[in-house]
Amino acid sequence: MKTFLSIPALIFLCLLAIPVSAQVSDFADSLFQEGDYLNAAHEYKRILFLHPNAPRIDFIAFRVAASYQNSGQLEQAIRAYQFLIDTYPNSLLVERSTNNIAQCHILLGARERGIASLENFLTQHKRSDLAPLAHFTIGMLHIDKNEWTEASQVWNDVSSVYPDSPFAEMSTRLARIVKSADTLPHRSPTVAGVLSALVPGSGQIYSGKTVDGLSAFMSVAVFGSASVYYTNKERYEVAVPVAVLGVFFYGNSIYQSIRAAETFNLQQEEHFQRRIQQEIRDSGLFGTRSTPKDNTKLVLWQSRF
Image 1 (spheres, rainbow, N blue to C red):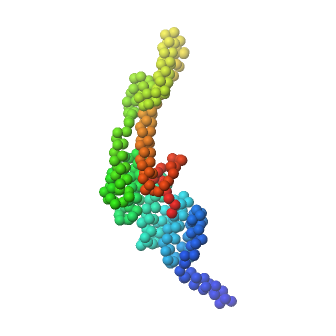
Image 2: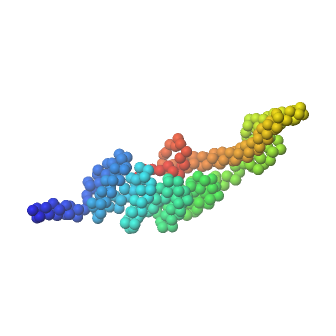
Image 3: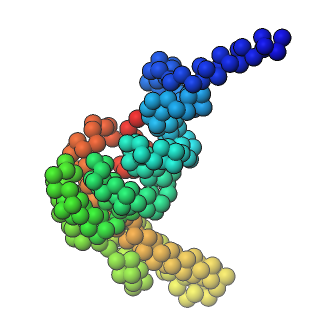
């Protein structure tokens, strides 16, 4: 009986020793192609467990990570990419995995960590085909925060370090455009506040909010005049509350003027940012993509793997 039970076990062990064939991953591959990424990840992980010494097993490990990334499970994707890097350090996919870890950090909103990961990638893989893209992406991340000077410096570096890269010409063009950020129309919040302190509503008009400015002026004028009128009539029970309202509208006019100037500057920067993003979209460097309907940043547009 013991001998009988040992035969299936021996057969199973022998099967584990047989190198995995291309057909073993067919089911996982089909799930991946159909977009069923989580189930594909589970199937690829099963192959990793059953056939750890199979040919191209590093590619299977990469597909685990890519499946998680495509399904939006970014933290699991980072761990899976790191597993590939640690387990198969000589794999040709290490470069791509390192770059994708940076992308996952960016997609998670960890911008600073994403930049650090990209810089780490450039340090380790200076001659990688992905290096120009990684360097270019750092510039895009600076644009997302309106860091014009930093973006210009990065794109100038792309042009000089990778002159034969398809990103070189575009980087030169973007660096030149970004330099014009200093000439964007600007409204000083301090000036706007002082103007409204002198003449209520004038700071809002200065910042392009003409209707709001006139409304603020009329409110302060009406309540101020009413307060003076009732004071002259010695009806202080009415004059005081009206005066308080007038002071409130006066202070609010100053505050809204400051906010209007800040909003004006922000709108100018956002318009400039969209212009740069449109330049990148039109370049075709990232393939043909439609403009997102939500507020997703351009740098977050990702391809499926």
